[in-house]
Image (cartoon, rainbow, N blue to C red; front, top):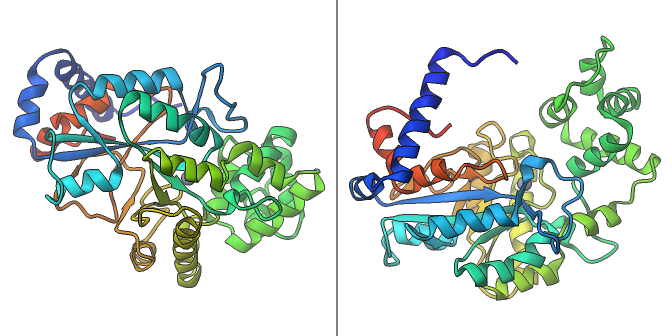
Amino acid sequence: MAPAPLKHRLKLAVREVWARLLWHTPLWRLADRLAPPRLVILAGHAIGGGAEASSPAGLAAEMVISRAALGQLVNELKRRHTFHTVSGGLAVLEGTASPARRGGVALSFDDGYRDNAELLPELVASWGVPATVYLESAPLEAPGERRVNWYHRLTWLEERLGSGEVARCLAGSGDAPAVAAHFADGHGAAPGELKRVLKYDEEPANVESAIEQLFQGEGGDGQALARELYMDWDGARALSAAGVELGGHTVTHPVMSQLTPEDCAREASECRGRIQAEVPGDEVRSFAYPFGRCWDWTAQAAQAVARAGFANAVTTHAGANLAGSESLALKRWALSSETQLHLIAAEACGGFELLRKLGLDLSE
Ligand SMILES: [Zn+2]
């Protein structure tokens, strides 16, 4: 890998020093007082690592945070800040709920993995903090009807055949013209390259049919894969009963920027409808864009989300959310076992926000 440009390395060094200073000294209290009230949303996927935790098999390492690392993060942050659900934290920012402290933190988890349902009810009770879980609805459905998205079927295929062979099979299938064109010169698939072509260059309908055909051909069992990775509606109800906010994350986890307006609307509204039908209780107000980078969703997707009845939506760009932040483009800090507490703490105490006011954004 080429070394990072000097400017970037300098930025990382400043960020490191500033964050450590805030973390290890009482300076954080001053930042907290000077910076505007804020909500820092943390974005995880699966929780793993404990002996008793179900194994989040087939998930990339950056999608898993160990139970121990998560516990340490929560316990350290809650000494300085108040934890909310995403909706609850936004209500505090909007002034419709009373703030406990100026810096709020929300824990969120995407997709609806099985370990969330098995571990979070007990964890949130023992930590005394709430959380928000964004559910993709299709994998949670009843046996025989549950479906796992193409991304997980592709990962399953890559684990068995290797990316190069999967790319070769898809290219030769006649169902994936963009893959065929991309790999026409015979070069092998670098890590992540095939996924990228499928996400952004191939038509969504082609991706679905080409992957499904190969998955079936290799003896893949979509029901078993969904059961292995995801919770079911009973699990979602258990989370809700434990005080966890449930949000939407579409039906099939598409790249929303690649969809027609009709499909975008259907993915948002059907997902919300399924959660509200299966989990009685609070209205579903929060949404997370699948993949969440600014090129993964568009104004059209945001509009579909709002029309479906969601009041807020989160991305995967790092930063703090303030009163008046765009409610359909909220920022989140990624959580994994690599997550560094002092960086999140610097954002939570408003330390990065103060520098943003001076024109220096250190969050990404
Ligand atoms: Zn997701």
